Image 1: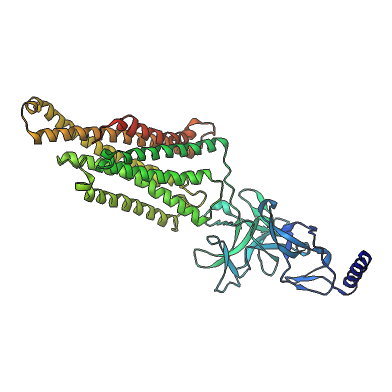
Image 2: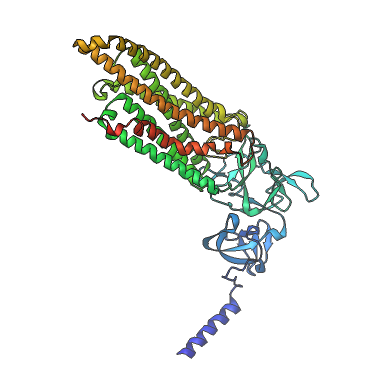
Amino acid sequence: MHRLYHILLVSYASYNWAFAEPLISLKPRPLCNFDETANLTNAHRFSNGSYLYDNVVIPPEQVTIYDYIEVLGGQRIPYPPHPRGCVCQNGGCIKFCCHPTKQYLNSEGKCRRIEHEISNSFYVNVTSNKGGTMPRNAINDFIKLNGRPCQYPEALLPEMHKEDGWQILENGMLTLPHYGTVVSKGEYCLTLLRTTDGEWSLTAMVCPVPNVLSTWKRVSNWGVVFSTLCLILTVIVYLAIPELRGSIYGWFIISSLLSLVIGYTVLAIISLSEYTFPEMTCSLIGYVAYFFYESACIWLSVIGYHLWRSSVRNKETASVDLVKHGKRSYFQCFLFTYLLSFGLTFALVIIQNSNIPNDFKPGIGVEYCWLDVHIWAALPYFFALNGVICVCGIMFTYLAAKVEKTEMEKYNDLKPIVSEISDLNLSGRFAFVRDNRRMITNYSLLLLAFVIVWLLNILSYLGEMLSLDNGNPLLYTTDIANFIEGPLILFVLVIQTKVLFCPRR
């Protein structure tokens, strides 16, 4: 039986050797760098094992079967077995993200056919070995490869960022003159993009730099998480105590802190993650964080305005029962705050996608999923804006405190009379004055916490813009601000005011 099996096996092997086409080894034997090979699955195969690819004949000894593909950094990803051949040894190769007649959509991670005339759109500047540069047709003068170096490559746009300038070398590699680096064929790809004047042109796409965090930055980012947990604890306390959640003042505080919690949570996701988000997702995350952070700041001014208005009108609107009397007032403030925040965020989106110079854009979604704090444009869109909001809050607080001081002086003058007569309206009024004054004090401390954090942030920003040395303490004030904001607010609103020990109804 074993002898018969051996004879049949030898006969079958002899038949294949004598009559079958030459076989390609199923075991990958790299004959050249992966980024110099082409997928030959759809190429014409001759009887002798050669392939015809892009008008180039590839002999069988330069073909092997691969069961993987390589992406950035030489990482191998499993892929169905397919033949690949060394094509770049016969001439310069150039790599496209998709088929040349298709456009790569970064936001969707896929290719789409271009329904326009693009025959004259394939010219690129090619630098020769002697240093000269001349335009050449990427379709006719190079062997075309297909593939992307990573899942979501990003476009180099020299018309928007001068440092994004690029050129193709004669061997098909990409050079970035600003950085003085050469990018291999496995680290970039080309695709057609429509320019601002409506024309189509080839654009190089490269992988974004991974978000690798230093030890100090990791500690700082976990400080943001700790600060967020303190804010959440403050919200829980305010929701748990009926006297706080049942007043307009309490709900103003809760709304402001919830907005701050959401904004901080989004920023923590951005900071802690080493994942490189797609451009559209990155922009969306940044705008969401901006919306809620500005909402938290605007709520501060709303609280100050409400306290001042209640003091001036001599009405108990700051501590009235929310269910009975305050729904309309709270709803009006709610609409004002979030509509204004939406307007500011929408304006930011319009400016970012406009044709103004990049130095005047906020930079959300370009290099970072947050405002680019390395340019002066962040000053008016964030730091100066929040400074104006804080000034408004300080102004309303001062006016409210001034009114309450006058009311308390009246109360002190009438105190002997009030103690002798049973005027419930007069006694109730001055009881309200005392409550309102306490709220103004608490609000002033909360506003002070925001101002301290704002000052620390802007000091760090100015230090960054003035290009101070890395060891300068001024550059770390933002990290300190992110760490202390939550505990500071918890202390001001819960511990210092002893709300945990306030009497229950």
